[in-house]
Amino acid sequence: MSLGMSLGNIILRVDGVVKRFGGITAVNKVSFDVEGGRILGLIGPNGAGKTTLFNCITGVYRPEEGKIIFQGKDITGLQPHVVAKKGIARTWQKVRPFKNMSVLDAVVVGALLRTNSVVQAKKRAVEALKLVGFPEEKYEMLGKDITLMEHKMVDLARAISTEPKLLLLDEVAAGLRPHEMESLANILRKVNKEKGLTMIVVEHVMRFVMNLSERIIVMHEGRKIAEGAPKEVANDPDVIEAYLGTKPL
Ligand code: ATP
Image (cartoon, rainbow, N blue to C red; front, side, top):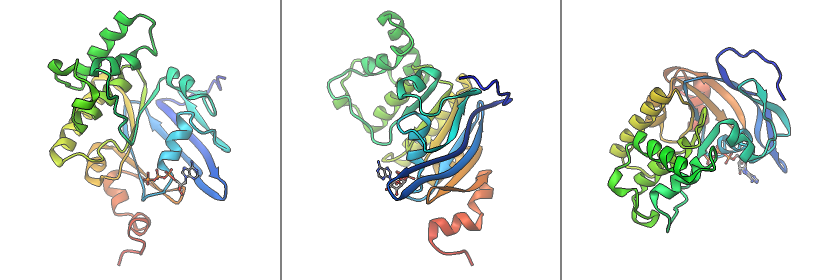
């Protein structure tokens, strides 16, 4: 359904979204806009509702209240594969190893969202692997034989090969060593710049998300408690209290 809404350069509007599990309100009237081509960070302590919000955006959960507007159209409650087809891709918090599949085939699976031609899908998969800088001599390696960092690159390439307009990254830095995090941040910057791909980055590793994002949203106990430039939110007393459990002196 088109709302005929003119949102300017707003690619995603989350409007008053509520998601409950029994007595728990995991996401509580959260609203924000994401501008096209930007990288937005989404942070908050454990259980803040970040993953649940991602699941509402990608159609895993249907919110009880509120709307998700993507490129001017209401996508609230659509099935995940329909949302993917509309141009929202995600990577997963827990790497799902594709043990006996080759790197290339794992990415081809993503590319098949847009084409029935395996030849075309392979072409797109190779482009995506090149974009993230995955070494060509390892395209035929099996999932069980590659490193965690390589898995993250493959998962990113798989998401890119679906040709999204918006990419949701769920704790992509988890488990990586500092120098790997730095290369991953550089890869994401490159993808953002070269593809103009908008990203929302859910992250616990503060340095990673603060360096990468132009704007940060902070959630706590289901609510959005702050929004602004990384420096602004890092100095916000409500944010400090949410993380430390006590007000700063
Ligand atoms: P983390 O940073 O630890 O991944 P998060 O910010 O992503 O946390 P969520 O995983 O979205 O937070 O969880 C928000 C709240 O909703 C938590 O209280 C959690 O226990 C609850 N919750 C999440 N998923 C479910 C579910 N499927 N059933 C019941 N409760 C859930």
